[in-house]
Picture (spheres, rainbow, N blue to C red):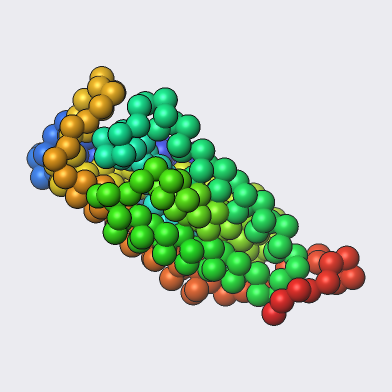
Length: 283
């Protein structure tokens, strides 16, 4: 569906331009931003109409109508929005509040990154061993919510050790969702729609990361964090850590929404599971 693909690309590009330029290059309610948002909405509407009328649409309506696919992709979208958004502003926090240099703040990000990898690896290995495998991700996201809540509460006076422990646990908890959402979505559709379902999940995960950066950027600008020249400066002088408190709090609220989406996602027994290969450890 070439026409559907073109409409999707244009709608997404216009939306990302509006989110990138809003609040920095142009005011949010300027004609430029409102025009981009309106045009994006029009192209999204045309894309939806194309899905309804095309003989072979870019995204199958059967896939979009699957509750597991909807909930799984939504949870991944929200999780990636919180994860990527927070990881973009975490180095700025480490430099301006904790007092690290640029290189030190980069090294300090290893806790979040390695924690995410460890969480995803653990979750992927445990999924075949659990009947209610969705609970792995729900426990992980709950851990991430608790830790980012603590981080927002102590952001004004947190030490480097506290930040490292909390961000590692945030990565560990949120990382458990990636295999669970992916396996759930792929397991929910027949083999003919496997590529489409995986593509939708990947696309919304990428879009969620972009929107998360824009959302937290809007929060940062709203609370006075100077980001217009962030590429040309290595240190930001702040009189208060409140912008980062609100950034972490907003990311935490986004994770709560991801947890709700996971809770609403139906579970389906895994396809092709060998009952004798791995004993069930938990219900």
